[in-house]
Amino acid sequence: MRSYEGFGVDRGPRQSALTAGTDEQLVTRFKRLLLEEVDLHELGRLEVAQRRLRLERVLAHLVSREGVILTTRERNRLVRRVVDESVGLGVLEPLLADPSVSEIMINGHDTIYVERFGRLERIPSGFTNDDQLLQTIDRIVSTVNRRVDESSPMVDARLPADGRLPRGARVNVVLPPLALNGPTVTIRLFPAALGMEDLLRFGSVDEPTARLLAACVRARLNIIVSGGTASGKTTMLNALSSFVPGHERIVTVEDAAELVLEQEHTVRLETRPANVEGRGAVTIRDLVRNSLRMRPDRIIVGEVRGGEALDMLQAMNTGHEGSLATVHANSTEDALSRLETLAAMSEVELPFDAVRDQVNAAVDVVVQLLRAPDGTRRTVQVDSLVSRRREEFRLAQIMHFEPQGGDGRGRYVQHPVPRGLALKLRQRGEPLPEGWTVADDEGDTGGTVPWSS
Image (cartoon, rainbow, N blue to C red):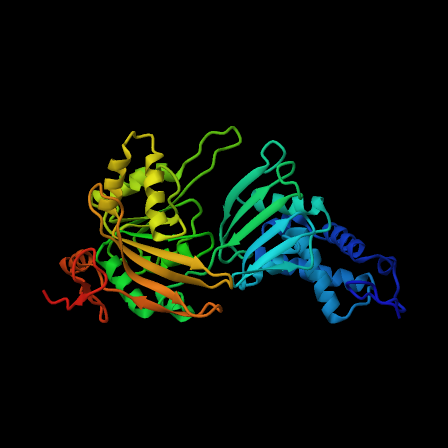
């Protein structure tokens, strides 16, 4: 007996014209038969899960009727693939269902990479051709009433959580001629909401630092979470937000809504891109400004990357203490400089000294995250901003991660807490967590004194 490549179709006594084809011909033939067999109007009234179940049953019947001899595994694989390509996202379906996959990168129809646990790996299978990939792209963007074509070759959108995407996702598409390798798609799957206990279990932060950060959130200190791409900024922001008291009104502002807050009184705002005529865009800055009129106790900005930095800093300085935000930067010092630069990008003409005054007055703590070469995401530094007014930025180190060896292991090193930060905690009813001491003076992190005064 001869086995056909892929599905292992054998030439048995019940031969048919179907068994003489290749994998792709077999899939194409059954897709056509499936469309002839089902009532599309009736199918459209079913939920996604029910629709798939119905199609799988019909297709299993068609395979038996057409006399194709397959093992149980081969039959299941054929049914799944035909259904995926008929109403789903083809080869992406098993990747989207895999909880270990955090990002999917398509560089042309035949090249697919995924990120698992911080590492990139290539997927052996791909789309048959660009047309099949473009059909899948159309299905993805149409779910959010968007389009991508030659006149609008780029799109960035958030896909809501549903049966196919229980976590939701953010998708970016670039078409030729802008993308030289063919249609390029990047799908970032939103992670499950993790709390501080999860980060402790993963070793992303140590327990003393977690307790101190929790106290800072409860004491309404303003915290900036800094780090590079995919370093875990949103995850840390979500974990910190869990310490906001439940009676407070929180307004979140995001480019793509990823945060999952457990507090009941939460208002979620998300940006909107321009329409095909280039009008109707709603930016992060528009939402930050509007959030100030919504009587928030706290404002959480998913990512600061433009002139909204000035609005956020002013909000932190005018009765919205305890706000949280993330910024792309490679160190705590860079995070402050980037905030200063972004705030200066506002149309409000302010001298750099005045912007620095805003940063010094607003920011209390900067948390630096790092994604290591092995994929590990870790809190590598926590600093307190101790400069005042228009001084050059001065940071007092509270904690840093000290690598030991080249395998990513190391230890968390605690430093005395600056006196000003400790005083703020005490004034706002938060005792300094056990195990921490207070620096001799605001700028000294070497000596320690008991915090009893």
